Length: 157
Image (cartoon, rainbow, N blue to C red; front, side):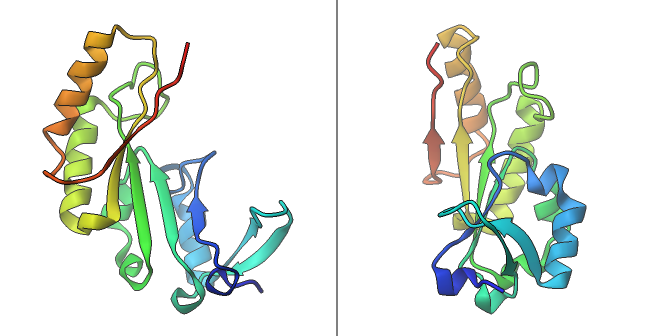
């Protein structure tokens, strides 16, 4: 069994699926088993990785819906972790994305519970007028604590 701490690899959950929202039951079962099958990012070979807190370098969550991390993760505080909340307000474009205000409330609650472990990720899709992008950014900003981090990434058309 591989150890993320020993291999100096944090576990990224996930770039392709939203583990906290879509794969939560699976991930909880892995936490209970204290192991998971996952690819080594250096060589794309699957291995069994330890999920024991002392053998885990860190958990990095990428999510557009942190509800499960807020209400069903008392074990999370046993780990080093980072939560990237992707919030753009583009429920009309992004399947499963919360509305601007639902997402803002969830993000505010996530910041309140986990503080510096949370970062907002704003990645607007260039299908909207630039003024609308600015309006949405400003609306979401109202939910984010002063001094909190935000990562911006833009798709180029």
